[in-house]
Length: 248
Image (cartoon, rainbow, N blue to C red; front, side, top):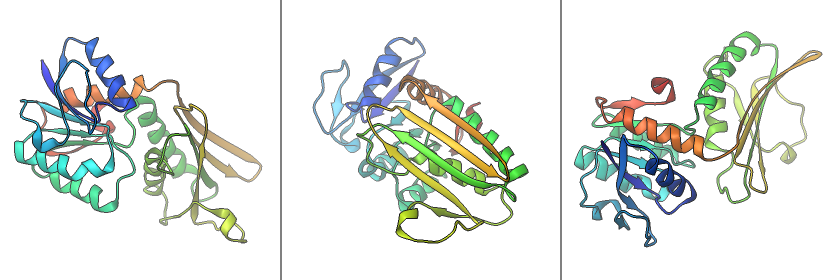
């Protein structure tokens, strides 16, 4: 049985993961990290370096402020880490890549199998249509989400960019300028409202025709399942950087 250290145990995703793990027999949560004390059936520590409970793998659904100390703890103790926190800075992403040289790291902005497939479909569409179609991405999330655009939207944009002949510019704020849309850009737009779990749509707009690819998350359980499966996968991996493409 794989023992999990859950970072962000008191957050909404942490609570969903806790419930999901309770329904499984192949893993358990041995300890959690959260700034608030919790009564959740396992010990909670306020910082990674305070944890003295043996664990096989880390799942991180917390806050970017925890990323660096968590990576340091993982490398020091040789514990594989699933990093699912979004809103990370370029410096934090680089730290993830550096950590992956010493431990297995699973890093993805979205833990959904459906989004993984959407990414592959978008890459195929971009390869076929990218030179002749304008590309726009619209993402929608609940009103409590603080980062915009979503990490998934940026992940999709990066995947599409890899298939284009010329690296595009990402455009986030059209109202700040009065100019026609340039050919070499991807528009990325954010909607925040209500309890929307997560919706992503990629629009390929051409001459007299539009192709739209979309994914809608109906609950946070799909992300919890993906993160847990990633943790089980990572527990047996060699040092390196892994993502949903490796899992599926």
